[in-house]
Amino acid sequence: MLIEAQAFLDMRGVSYSFPAYPRVVNQVDWQIRRGEVHSLVGRSGCGKTTLLKLAAGLLLPDSGTITVDGQALREPGSQLGFVFQAPTLLEWKTVLDNVLLPVALQRTPLPADRARADELLALMGLSGLGRRFPTELSGGQQSRVAIARALLLAPTLLLLDEPFAALDAITREELQDDFLRICRLAQTTVFFVTHDISEAVYLADRVAVMAEGKITDDLVVDLSWPRRRALRYGAPFNAVCAQVRHAMDKVATC
Ligand SMILES: Nc1ncnc2c1ncn2[C@@H]1O[C@H](COP(=O)(O)OP(=O)(O)OP(=O)(O)O)[C@@H](O)[C@H]1O
Image (cartoon, rainbow, N blue to C red; front, side):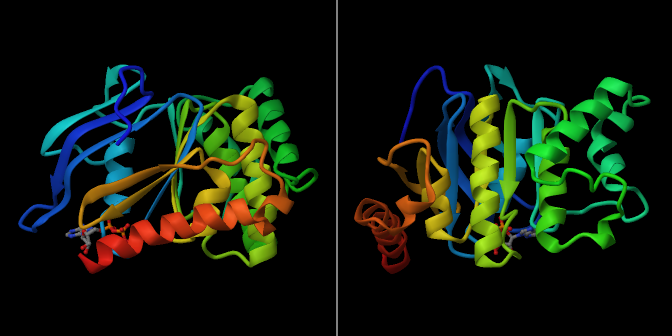
């Protein structure tokens, strides 16, 4: 496991059980360096979403410590952004107002907030769609809105739980490229949960493998940046995917 002093997200000895249920996160030590993208893969039910909710401050660990940028995490704050599998947009609000929601929950949005929301919509390839309602968008466009909303307050840590799972393969690849471009530009630190090994590898500096509540491997993705589409068809990319698959199989059979 990567253990270092200046990790941006730093989980040490973190355990969690839902009340009256067995432990689902078990003594996890996991670190993400500032500005890096780390993916988390593992079989269904192994505890990925629970770990992400702990990193978000939505759940508090039974034992262990979690710090973000050196500060103990006690509750979700504006330094954190979330994107979940379903885009969870408010259907009665326009696309622009959905993006502005994190600000509107605190105060009346200012012209500068609207300008920022417009800018994010443009970065996500949604220029001119701000006045539509979510039901007038495709699934991929809705996912883009959810990402723009998560980025509005310029979070230093972005937590994503299978945000592209419902999309077709080509839309998904396009979104992965746009997502990476924006996160690298803003130097956002990213914790990305996915079932898809090639997505995990393409997006990340490191891929962690989780099994039965533990992080069993934390693999460096030794591929060049920026990631380009052609990378997906090369031998080095497939070799890293095979390495991740092997790490998952190893724990499934032990
Ligand atoms: N609210 C809850 N109460 C009790 N048990 C729960 C609750 N939420 C999740 N669990 C259990 O905790 C374990 C881990 O769930 P979690 O959602 O973290 O897994 P996951 O790896 O994200 O799964 P998936 O890939 O299917 O989304 C599972 O066994 C699940 O049944």
